[in-house]
Image 1 (cartoon, protein in one colour):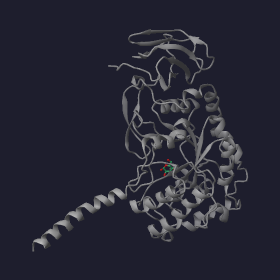
Image 2 (image 1 turned 60 degrees about the horizontal axis):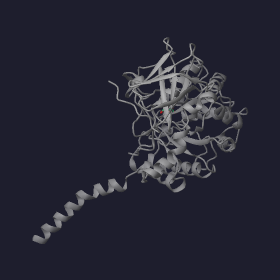
Image 3 (image 1 turned 90 degrees about the vertical axis):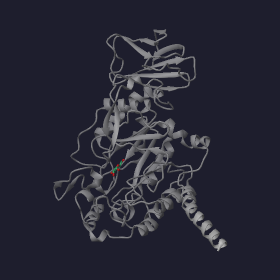
Image 4 (image 1 turned 180 degrees about the horizontal axis):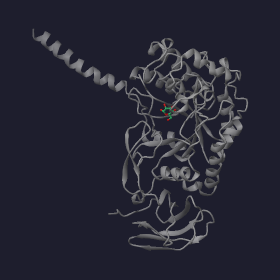
Length: 467
Ligand code: GLC
């Protein structure tokens, strides 16, 4: 009896222990030391600025279905318009990007000062923009174009020293039997999710990880509808087997945290202390091309966003939505060129920097919503931003002070010299207990953001806490 009781106790104890063990071995994210993690993230942290490209057959309807505009973002047209599969698939016949020039796209990114590109290899419509054996619903087999544009992009990225990453919609897939946010609308979509994961998602991720040489450098997952740990784990295992040093975002699902937070269409007031993060944002209101969307952000907004994000330690992934002919819309090209001109002069205040040593310039954190409608906060202060790297502070001034003076509040490190990046001419400054005061020229040299470098005697700026 006693032995039986003992056995039962042991079994029960083990039973309660087992889930904990499983939870741990199912532990999803990469096990690595801080040094290994920092080394893996180093290029991405230095890069700061990347190009997002949403490109697929949705650029054919460009926001219209049966001559009526479909509300919402362009790449969701099949879902929002409840377009039957057979009908949607006809768009592929008109997808013929003969004007696509991988070299020109990558050069556009490079000239904008961007260091990496993330392109939709497959969006929620399931259309593979690459050569795949897993599904015939791909650019090579169903379009008159008949080629794999990711191959050309990988070659051009290699040539220009830009890293290439792939966005892959692992969970939602409206044509291959994956999930559909909001529910399916066509009986042809009914399919077993695990079968979709095994036959489509896992196979395609393997192809993407194997067929593009040194790339992808980033795997950008999205919308983990219907993902669970088991499904996510299968994808994760492929990555670890084939490209373990890749950088992944936080949208795989199944409890994986990933390497980066991905606020969408907004810049959180305080970034994500202790986590790498990247704000992705559209240049107009849509990711995928929509012919009617001309609500372009100004170059001023884009440059100041980049300064704001860098000052909070994040990256900026700025989107273009090319047409079905393969052209990046001209208003996007123009803005990117203007950002590039600013970056040429001021890039050292962005690349390889870390967050502001101050913080009071950000002002109050104001309540807001992110791209998913979740609560977040944004900064109210809008006069200047700051980044730093060893021995240097970069002050990026948006609103030029009428007084001709700008105080760096509480800066205790000895300032050695200060100069505008645009001409490198020394500026006068005063150092006091309360901080360092910069004496500025009467006119702002750059109406969008004028950048001043303050060289300091300490590697890391010492700043007294502000009340
Ligand atoms: C969203 C949308 C999507 C877009 C992405 C970019 O999750 O589903 O269409 O690709 O955000 O962040």
